[in-house]
Image 1: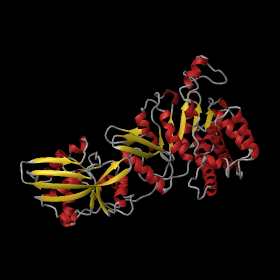
Image 2 (image 1 turned 120 degrees about the vertical axis):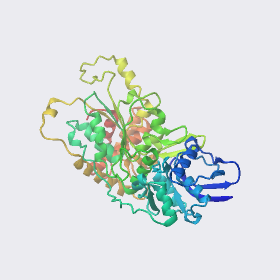
Image 3 (image 1 turned 120 degrees about the horizontal axis):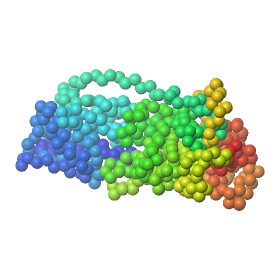
Image 4 (image 1 turned 90 degrees about the vertical axis):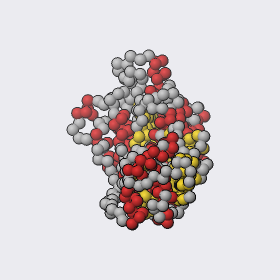
Length: 506
């Protein structure tokens, strides 16, 4: 009888758990038994591992083989255990010294010819390994750039099972090219200077980026709603290293590095189609629980175009993450929590035909159709929106101007300066954005001028705003005060914030 063990990582959401892969080879009829709550992809590892070992000219043990993944109560999913199982099996068979693998963590999927393929969630898996005390990990070459972001764990990137076996037996391995980590800070493809006119919408975008306020853009097709929304990340401050690692971990779990670099400091923007489902929006899945669009937009922008066209319940599913900054998904294996601190940008036409406006241009919709169309955005959701902006059609004068509008770099400088003021004000309180000021502090140390509060209390008494609306107006007023260099929000700041929440043109 021969026994060997290796170590791998199981992910439930972003939380990683150290898994001990034990292989026992005993006398008896040839059989292969996999224990430890594997899913279908992991159950199929037998054929992948067997083909990879045979095609690498290694011996497959034609005896009774038992593979145990412990802790046994923890559900395991995915193909990332293939490499760990193969190494443990060969060690139990006596072809690899067991002392070489006792302190290593193995991650990787095996192809039939022995190639080590990339897997999802390498960065959060390595974070869990580091917390558990691991010091060295073997990962696929395709995941090397992502894995190297984890400081404190020595990364050995391998592309083939033969390379791993040669290294374990002789200590020889190819020297990998050193990765030059240069954090990308700007995206020069988009710029606010491309937007013609729209001063109110540009101001609202600047306020939203400064304070983290959610925004609704209402206007006819072609007015520039999508252009403005897509350029909001260009005026947001670059992510800190810790924020970038959080974003990278979420995108790694979702397998989303085809469109985003793991070393990007640019705030992400996620734009799901309006036909997306509730699971795609908030996350979930039958087997492996993946983050949804609201988590992929963590520390960035979640832009939903044609918002009234979304399926019933999809937008309302965002109400919890908008308040909590996290999304909790309950499944039979337990609750999985994903981060979801995002800036929500909604865009909508004013009516089904899209031509309705205060000027009454060529709209063929009845008043009932207009009310029913915008009524698809529920009241509780709209109450969580800080800014509502009317985006009017671009006029001839704006299009005829030869000079371009203000650039993203100029706007971004003002946003960074205003955020720095807020960060100094909130030092030691556990938050840094005006949109995160707790309600109790808005009534005490962060209350605006007395006359401004009296104005808001009158609006609340007349039921023109809700209690949540009052708090959101004060938070926007603080952002306006930071942009205007006011020590506290004035009556003018509060009035402007109230008008922008009501959707009145300035």
